[in-house]
Structures are given as C-alpha cells and as structure tokens.
View 1 (cartoon, rainbow, N blue to C red):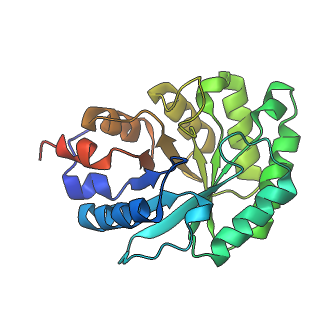
View 2 (cartoon, rainbow, N blue to C red):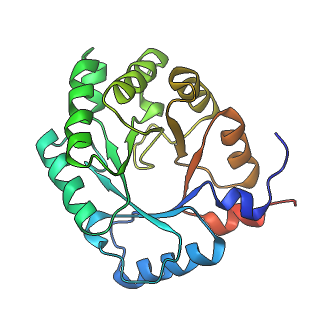
Length: 220
C-alpha cells in the first residue's frame, strides 16, 4: 500500500500501556502522548480507570479477562460493565482459547455474548491469541465473535508466549469477517513498515505500545 502520513497512521492506533507495574503517573503521561500524537485511543488496565487526564478526542479502551481469558464469563461481563462505568469507551476481551482447542467454538460464542450483553453500547473487541491457534481455530474464533455481536476481532494480548500479530493471521481474520467487523492487529508491531503491512493485510486498528517510534518511521 502507499505510505501513510504520521497523522493518517496515528488514527489507526490504540496507544497502549498494560504493564503490571504501571502507575497513575504513567497513565497521565500516556494520555498526554496520545493527545500529542493524535492516536485514536489509549488502552489501559481496568484498575487505572477512570483516566484523570485531558484526552480531547482520544477514546479510552480497556481489557477484560486479561491476559489469560481463563475467567468465568460472568466475571468478564462484570469487569467490562464496571470499566464502562469508569469511563471506558471500548472493551478488549480475551477469549478462553482452550475452548477452541477443545473443539467447542459455541462455548466461545457464549462467552463473548455474555460480555456483549453487559456492555451493549460499547465497542467490543475480541482477542483471540491468533499466534497460538491453527488457521481453522482462527476462523472459528472470528465466526464466534461475529455471531456474538462483537465489533472487532483482535490478534493478541501481547503477553502470550506464542507471539503477537502476524500478517498472515490478520489477512485470514479479514477474509473471515469481511467488511462486517474491524480487525485489530496487536503485539510485536514495532516499526512503520510492520504497521503498514498489517493495514495492507486488512487491519483497521493497531495496538501499539511504542507508538512514537513507529510514527517516527513515517516517510511522508
């Protein structure tokens, strides 16, 4: 694809800080950087809500069931609802990929739907840990997310030992959901050309922790 400007690329980005030792001061700095860079959103841990910093037009995303997905659906739903009350505009939920590996995508769909019903008016992104799944399991996860009413499918938490986003996974996810859902590529995207490759493969959102460094690589 053609090069994107810093402004264009920033509009794809959820500027992310999910480290376990993050402080309120770190989140205030993240928010200020997001505003300065012009990112779409920030993504923070639910315990850091509400974000006590000027955000302008930058939205707030958070995670639930993070990072393992091995939480009861009712707990994920409660966590998501509490996050929305705390000011989150978007929820990135982690599925239980063990359900997929056990051949039960219907259980995954039920898990997602439980969260969807708890936050009906919020953007819901479904993290599938694509690097840990077969192609068939990726397709099953995307179909479950769509059937359950999610808005996005997302590659990765960035915490799984199998790795983060790949161009092949993003392309397969896009082929599966068509233009009906967004696709968020997240995990291991550290350079401008990597970000462009993900967008070219079908990503409509990027999860980046090193946003400034990625944007610094823009050639136009």
